[in-house]
Image (tube, rainbow, N blue to C red; front, side, top):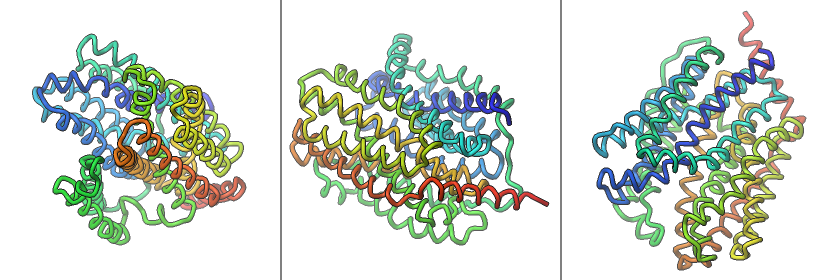
Amino acid sequence: MDAKTRNRVLTVLFVGVLMGALDIAIVGPALPAIRDAFGVDDRAAAWIFTIYVFFSLVGAPIIAKFSDRYGRRAVYITNIGLFALGSLIVAIAPNFGVLLAGRAVQGLGAGGIFPVAGAVIGDTFPPEKQGGALGLIGAVFGIAFLIGPIVGGLLLLLGWPWLFLVNLPIALGIILLGMRLLPPTRATQRTPLDVLGMVLLSVMLGGFTIGISQLDTTNVLFSLLSLDVGPFLLLAVLTLPIFAWAERRAVDPLVRPSLLGTRQLILADALAIGAGVGEAAIVFLPALLVAAFAITESTASFLLMPIVLATAVGSPLAGRLLDKMGSRFVVLAGALVLTVGMFALSLLGDVFWIFVVSSILIGLGLSSLIGAPVRYIMLNEAPSEDRAAAQSVITVFMGIGQLLSSALVGAVAASAGGGTVGYKLAFFVVAIVSLLLIFLGLGLKGQEQERRTAAQIAANARRATTP
């Protein structure tokens, strides 16, 4: 595939990921309107996010596995179609239950978009170009949070359903281009689907998502023992060893144990959790700003611009550095910058200029961890027949980190009485997590060793396909 065609493929992937990322950025401002339209309270409205997150996490490994089995093009187009269908259901929902069903369909489609996009990059781009391509895809999230509030505000003038209806023409364009440009890769052999693995994974992630989402961070211990949280988390813990047992015995497992079995892959998964913790902690920045500077929530949201801009600029830069320096250098640099930014925020975040500087450092640090670097590691370590499944593992672990972060930051802030002191202490804990990422990064392979591993995997793939 020539460079011009690869760039067209990257455009299709970019727009697809942007559509999913924009949904996250613009749904928040619409929540009050949706809540009022259906007459539900805040607790019920929270399910608009919870059900989306759950189906996104569950959908990532299942749909990614389908991509490895049935081809990237068919599954990527199906992802986009599911997301569009879910958007339509939400927009025309006659009641709140149907709206939640639409969000579930949306989440299922969105869960597979990023893993399959990462796998397509691994299939179509040469190793020396993969980091740059992943970096551009990673920049989507910064761009989405830049334009999302503006797009959301304009569409809300027409009515909240338009926030979802706008996805339909975009999805149609992606599907038409995808049918023409995306490679129709397909596994060479047919094996039974790992239905048991799918069921167990759904139960495990479902218990974890529901339990964490309903955790009362003002009284964690009592909440953990309550019927709203405890049974769900216990279900997740008990299902984990059963899932591991089932995957070791499956003919074609949903998550191949080898994807979790080497030091490099284990480090990538741990880094994904840590990056998810740092990324989700940003949600609490407006609360710190409101407490520290006595400003409105809308003004506080505007002050997130430095971190968003830094992420949008840093992601493609990190991608280019991956191709030149390797993942170890980028991860270490990103974790170091993130740690400095988090410590500065936690100690002196109520000084305005320090807040701005620390926000830029946090944005640059996160852009060097989320998106490209850990997915780049997976592209270099996973065989081509498990490429999408490997990408989905990163999606799941990052999602777990995001859920844990919401509970962790809320609990620490509440334990210290909230306000400036509480949130500064919470970000100090996140800074400790960031510091741990530096030590994890030290264990990664150097660039030359990373290249040798990628070359060996490519050679094994060629031998496997040679008659």
